[in-house]
Image (cartoon, rainbow, N blue to C red; front, side):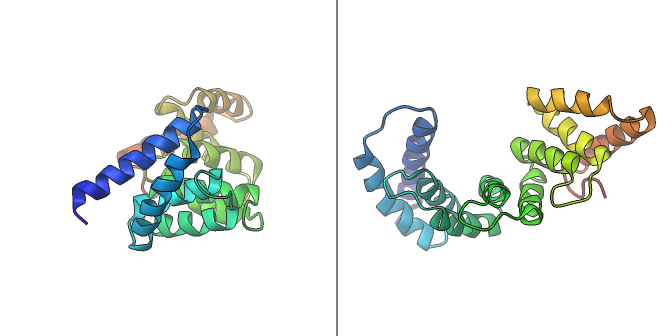
Length: 193
């Protein structure tokens, strides 16, 4: 199959999934047709197709909803470095969908996505550090991740960053800000280390 046909299929699937996420009514026949092509590409190892197939199973688009199948395909794409799949895998572990709930596993996958600049993963890491889920409670790290997410426009992260700052000493806030600055300078790699 040529690259243009592959790209076209992925664009069609992404468009269908975005439309569905926006709550628009889509004919399930369109999903069923896309499912065949996406599955074929996913089985050939295409990470974007694996992610899209995971979303289709996760949301029950063109196929019966199946968290275990969504988990399987998210994991395949996540292991290839797909940040959206890493984030979705983190959510599944965080919420216990298709797998037993595991905060340490959620933290691991959120971190991988966050280190690629994924704004929602950065936000979720802030929450996990704030409440000590899957890690020791650490307000400095929570502030840092909320700050990074807020720097990309996440208003709720900005609110939580400010809220947690009110519970911290000025020196701790300064430490968190320095970590966030260092993290940005390192392109989100080795943040908080």
